Amino acid sequence: AQSVAQPEDQVNVAEGNPLTVKCTYSVSGNPYLFWYVQYPNRGLQFLLKYITGDNLVKGSYGFEAEFNKSQTSFHLKKPSALVSDSALYFCAVRRWMDSSYKLIFGSGTRLLVRP
Amino acid sequence: DSGVTQTPKHLITATGQRVTLRCSPRSGDLSVYWYQQSLDQGLQFLIQYYNGEERAKGNILERFSAQQFPDLHSELNLSSLELGDSALYFCASSVSAGASYNEQFFGPGTRLTVL
Image (cartoon, rainbow over all chains, first blue to last red; front, top):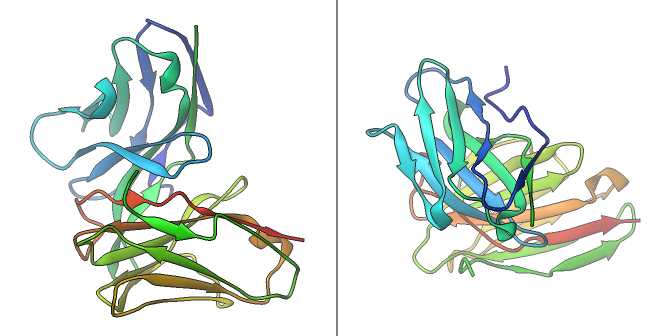
């Protein structure tokens, strides 16, 4: 079974508009969830994580994510998109596999912010 | 800059050959992770080392091997290369042993092209 799903290959928004990048997870127990961003020709950069506590997590560059246990979702949000936010976004979840914890990444969502 | 360095940036080689990718983790980080990113497979976890010892194994082929040295740098060896091995290979590092709740810091990657 897929541990983490990003249902949208690409999200298009206009600069200044709010953005949402969707992520759903499927792991047993309490999930540890992460968002990473990849700019062109760069490695992944950590944005934010949810381990426990407040369902609304704030991260780097004005991004935040909302953990929703009933919907098994961890959507990434930003109130006002910037052109410079255009990048590839990955959701990830910790999963116990083969006697160890591993970070399982989603397929990625390309965010395109148009001026 | 994440503090994780990878060499070389680009590598072009022929099928059947063997290559070595090198990674130096952030100062103070004991864990090193290797990932493969390709268009068809997405971001796949290969293997993790912690303080010189193998900690977790993912989708790593038998033709691939890795090690972490006493100075904590790591090398990923890819042998009997096939066209399908062409991908971006990332190294990441973190403080802790488990891929639990500490974020991973990614290097810029090595782009491998097998001709």
